Image 1 (spheres, helix red, strand yellow):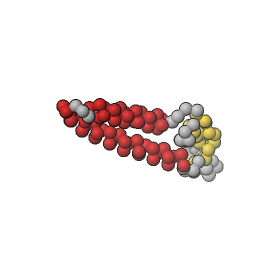
Image 2 (cartoon, helix red, strand yellow):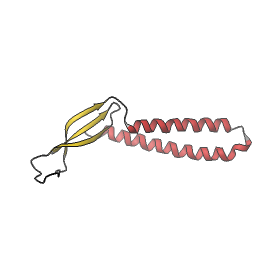
Image 3 (cartoon, rainbow, N blue to C red):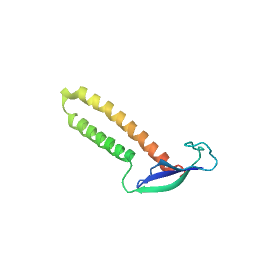
Image 4 (cartoon, rainbow, N blue to C red):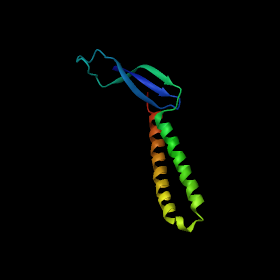
Length: 110
């Protein structure tokens, strides 16, 4: 039952912050008992880093889609198109993973 700060962003994502108060169960100085409780929640009106990273990946995905469409009629761009399709698939998989991570953290208990 040691107490920690918590940061919560406008998107619902949260993270643990600094250690604030030691519980009476733990007698060793500087150690925590392992059970985290919230001392104070700091509300941050901005979006979290994960949301910003997701937005960056989505912009990259849109750019790759535009490039593929633009290069579609150019016969000499086949290698570039294949490379862009590979990057697009990787980027979309990364976005899906990041969205899942964000959703799990939003729905977790705290």
